[in-house]
Image (cartoon, rainbow, N blue to C red):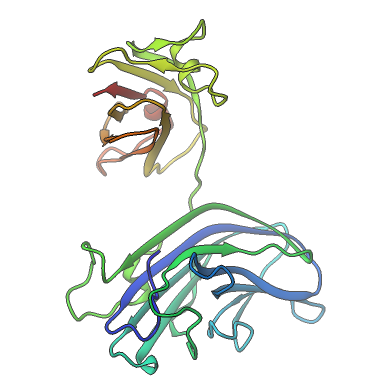
Length: 309
């Protein structure tokens, strides 16, 4: 998230959003930061984005900041119940019209469980926690002995004015809604369960191709002996609806190009990763074409495939 490069950067602009499920298990009286925006350059510097507090009079509250330099100063308090999941959406925008610190503008929109509780509110920024040139590129989740909580299905969105795909025209300042809201969703991790229609790679031992290819210990593996060889793998998923994307992650310890693809009964997608040298780690994403929604049946009938190039 290469945003907020110092609030004296002339005409700097960006937008980012963090979306996740939050479940607070236990909390003793007190308050503290749950989530902050940090920089790799100075590990001890950050901008608090989400605080939490607990008191006998006010109960347990998420504190949605209105001042990143003093997050407990006039926050928006959202009361929560323990052991309950909340879909939290934090959308922010930033821009600076001149080279003076006073021109820096930060805004936020906060949404809980699909209901917007604060929209396009100004966020006070009285002093810069980073120096010019330091890039906000770390999300920091804090641990404390007075609160126990769970974060699940984290989705991060980010774009800055330096990006070639900046979604706004020249001279147009962003709002928190520049990064569109993401509705509540679940991210499932699933594994291969059998060979697909093609088994052209060679397993290292007696295990079948799908089991060798997905051995997390590295003891078993599959190898392509020529270009154009394809392995496909079957998989099973839980009962789901409104599937937006599937993601495949793999490892290669050879100096080779691999093309990944995924095909269901209604749509397919291909992403290729070219490895110049050394071991590769790659991610392939296949998204719905928008006309034939994916179902549990079509995804279970689908296959992941890898082809040597």
